[in-house]
Image (cartoon, rainbow, N blue to C red):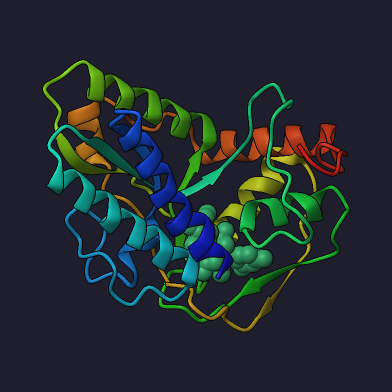
Length: 251
Ligand SMILES: CC(=O)N[C@H]1[C@@H](OP(=O)(O)OP(=O)(O)OC[C@H]2O[C@@H](n3ccc(=O)[nH]c3=O)[C@H](O)[C@@H]2O)O[C@H](CO)[C@@H](O)[C@@H]1O
């Protein structure tokens, strides 16, 4: 219910307030989870969405996309770009801004970095028998600063071209790495050992996800520039400089 409240009801409230104030341009932070289980790979923007999405978070991102499409269909003054993030990782290269999940991290990279810094003992790798070269899932990890630049390019597109209506763009590198490959890359970048053990699969995980990011390259003049080493190096810099995150209860 919280996801629905925040993502769907919250977005609808925002759309209403925007409409009332005649503000009709929006960049929406969507997610690759809208694609659900892949019918084909890499995911292109015209891969069907909303089918077999195995978690409520993903469904709320899908519903909000549908809501925003309906809004732009009914009023041609709306300009909406939906950016479908693959797996954001990394941190600001300064080490000052980074990810500080509440409690035990759900996502892979912050879990790895908390094991490396000694806050958590061991990484549980969910599944070792997927149909992938090393048996672990494959994801398209993207550095957070590349993701941020994608937003600037989308803004540029929205205000400096004939852009109208609704359009989705994948923000990913186009290259997949397995969970084990990420662990190894992190060990290399940090010089720390990351203890791991294999456990059972996590419900709802799809085996492989990676982007076809050519539409963003062609239309937005954007491509991800940073590689997996830089993602790990910057995550480690943030984590090692801030082992307890921001150390404040609320921001
Ligand atoms: C099912 C689910 O929650 N999906 C969310 C998850 O996607 P997604 O599952 O892709 O991202 P995660 O970082 O949670 O997991 C990536 C991969 O690492 C594995 N893994 C993860 C954590 C861990 O402790 N051990 C481990 O082995 C997972 O099984 C998965 O194969 O994060 C995305 C944001 O980045 C969200 O958009 C997705 O809705």
